[in-house]
Length: 358
Image 1 (cartoon, rainbow, N blue to C red):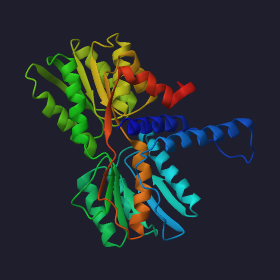
Image 2: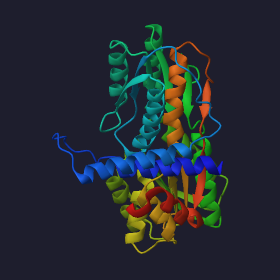
Image 3: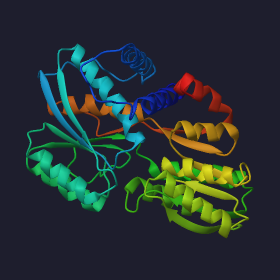
């Protein structure tokens, strides 16, 4: 398990260093760009070396070229981390003389209707397979089933599966409820099983967020001396998470805990709590990786981070997609899992992930 954790965290950091660093290509080369390419190559090699060593990558594709369309919830660093795994798989197939032509698309803000439209568009563009990180199950499932009926294979990935759909397989973290329960249990215990707590969620209707939120309520309900004072959404924006938490600091000066169920939540909540001078007084638990998240974990503002294996999500998605397109059998569900990370692990992971960038 630790090997998988290291893989995830290393890739997360690598992605955060890479994401958003692109610039217009003016046809010129300089030492800085060459150095950046060298760094990216080395980081990719490190990430690959620390990936799931038990995963079989010996498959020999039946075609020379594959077209895969990937659509996900929104433009966000968390998905950049998944794409690092995608790119690594693409490079591995390139070494075998196989071209993977993939599209990586998402709206700026979560939009279930936009996701349906993107699936429908992809169906008409000759893709061999459409991969979807489901925004809202009720809205997306009909589009998934229609795509399959139209003769296009569909895979689901990341954090939401629809087992009763016509999708071919799922790759991702298949226990959002369990993640939410793990965060809530850890924070409630740290609070001494009493006090006031608030829930900070992401997008309304996003399946993974709703499942974690449900787990928050179910877990806290076991502790009669803990009162849930509020439940708010930040729609996956750090600035909104800061604003919400600042309001809580004013409305509930005796607030004891905050449960966060996406990647932006803990960054915003921690910043607001730290700015209020209450680091360690308000116990915070949250999802996923971000350099800021791990720094808050290190200084004690964040108590626990539940981290998903993004690299393997992307890497295994592409490998399974190729096999599926070829008509080969693939596991219906590939669960890459997650793990709880605490303060005593922060330095180790920051050094591995971010190195000098920290």
